Image (cartoon, rainbow, N blue to C red):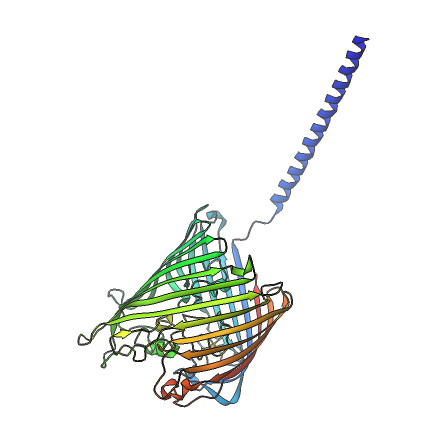
Length: 531
């Protein structure tokens, strides 16, 4: 009996072992089959493209009573409304359609394993029916086309070693006033971080080193050559930039920035006949701070340093319904006139900005927000040996400082433009007089992620007034509708009306020397971001 029981147990054990071995073999075969199929599919996958295309198409049809009166400036107009760019409000209606196409090409060769990337960004702008078979930017919409009008915005090489925490960008690239890398971050981030592109928001040639040694730290060291005249002489403008962004708390971004600019051109070079620099007509054209030295000789050398700090709390409403951001930045330095009989001029100006928003609904477009800005000014310029005005990149180029987070259409600059980019306070320095202003906006996502509406208002006062004028620059009301036809394909309708204040009672406030008619505008847009 005992032997029979042992025999039965042995039989069962052998049978179970054999069954287990069979199941294990079957499982291994299945795994091998799956892996073989996956490998086969992987080998059949197309090789990732080395060349990537991203495009942006923009149409704008406008009706307005604002128009340039100088025929030479019909193609492209930038700067302060009612200033030397000849923009006026008239008792007739301007009607026109503009078009912009911005192609971007990114080349990332597989043979380099991602070590180097080339980026090229270009732009074609024109007004329907303006000109054909010519040479020049911002024209080419005439019959038969044929205009040579391609503009280069970026041409740079991005070096990024494998698994590194830094990258180096060389060549023509974006120069923005923040520590974020503009090659990989969207424009909307820069409009609500750092200094909101109020000082630097354009392109320049140079070198930028971006670093992220820790997930809570971003840094940028940059050198940009703004102007170069005779290469064998000390006649150029360059800027070095050091920016640090930290996240001491998951909801808090805290930034620190230091920029140094050296200008030894003595006013040489620049944009066409307008020149560039502190004493140039370009600064006046842009509505920026223009320094007028005593005497005929307006040549100078200058050293300018910007020191600032900024913060953002609860970006994109990641944890709560309130979002807050603010910055304070000062520019200081000195101007040394070429005329040795004149004394050195000291510089000290300050800018402060703050924005508070509340999301009341389901999406980030269900919100109401308030933004205020204040800049110091100087009523007598540099005549007393001190300049207390704010200096932005609009002194050296155009357009450079593009403050646009306010969402105003006429009082402050609106970025939804092609060839006509002007506003009443076009530079945050307000011609060096300073400004105190604010905007309030209410937005509703009527159909979530499909159809939204916004109403808003803006007001601005000059820090100091001009002779025979007051401080109230203007008050604006505006509205906006946006409808997403498809993903990244959006139809828009905007309208704005501004009341000109007693600031324009001063003859020096306008190029025409008279109080202007209240400006208004309406426009439709169609924008398409292409991948």
